Image (cartoon, rainbow, N blue to C red; front, side, top):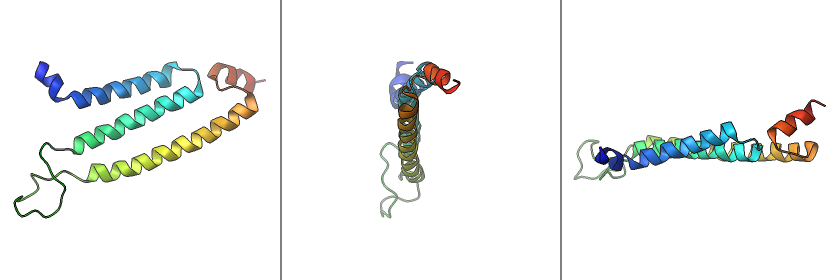
Length: 121
C-alpha cells in the first residue's frame, strides 16, 4: 500500500492542490480569494496533464537511431495543449482582476454578501 502512494505522489499532490482550490471557491467570501482559488485549480489541472504526458526514462520525440518505434518518446501533445491552457489562464486572470477592480471602485467592497446587498439597493 505504501508503494502505491509513493509511486503516485505527484498525482496525490495535484489532487490536494485541486481540493484546496475547490475549497476556496466554495467557502471563501472574498472575490479575490475566490479568484486565487480558481487559479490554483487551473494550475492543478495543467500539472495533471503534464504529469500524464511524462514517461520515466523517456526522451523528446526527435529521430534518435537507437530508439525504434514510439516506446521511448514522451508524448508532446499534452505539453503543447497546456501552453495554450496557460495563456487562457493568464487572460482569464487579467480580465477578472480588471472586473474586480471596477467592482471595488463602484461598490467599495469585494466581499460577496456585502456586494450583493449593495447591488440590490
